[in-house]
Image (cartoon, rainbow, N blue to C red):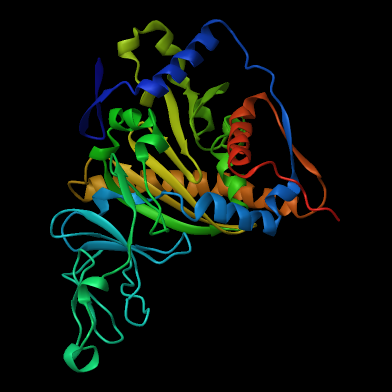
Length: 401
């Protein structure tokens, strides 16, 4: 079954997302039966968030070869559209070719290693020309021209000197790229049933609207925790979005290495009176998907946010927040509407509240006031997150001395 909605002048039809619907249904049962969450607590050493040696291991084992979300396919509308991405530590070039395929390459000339593109946002080009010696690469990465080749490189086989391609996968518009040319991407294995939820929420039909990039003085795990934590919503966000939500009515569920969560909006109790096929998850709750290791997708009533984190040090993280909307703005009025909506969540909520407290927490980590952090029953999804890390890397052991 499906439900039909009109919002911001756009008609959409959304099938119920199967995986998140089960979490939503279980949360409704909790509310109906007045069930409280199972008691679950934990402690984590504060040095886990400050230890540079551990951070280097995290970067190598969790990030270096992992398929990471770097954008949405709607950013590249026509052949030659491209953008650069440096946040992962590798210079990446993503381009739509003449065959309409999207590819990713290392943004490096194969001659003397010079950066090819310095595009600011999305740009368009018929080919990539190295600014140093003008070697030219086609949109599919092949080396198409070498100036004075017969005199300078008479034995050069251009077919062996194309751009170094990186593995790229796409799921409902989300672009996943690994910085390791020898890695492989299996999104079916990585995402599992979440793929069907993305299809139900129509991520592939949404279009890119805006993106901001900021650098925060906070460990990347602290920021992930902030977006897994339903305990803080009505308190930290009491002057912004907090009044839109019920206190302590939230549920999460692990799905492979990923975590799905549902936080009840004020309208949530209305779903108790509705048939299952009348549920509207976008109106009754805030649904979020944490995609290990660094991406959170939040489904708002009228648009979708993605937050991707790229740690650069134990106490520093690049944060990318992008906004996807149901259709491209038809006029200036519509564009202004989405600009306001984006700024409210980006500046008023994420920057001023969530990311602010993460930086404040990092200061606390370095102060020596606490040896350990405490996590309670309404923060169980955070414990799941750290268990996933431990499964990948083994348990964290603080350095002695």
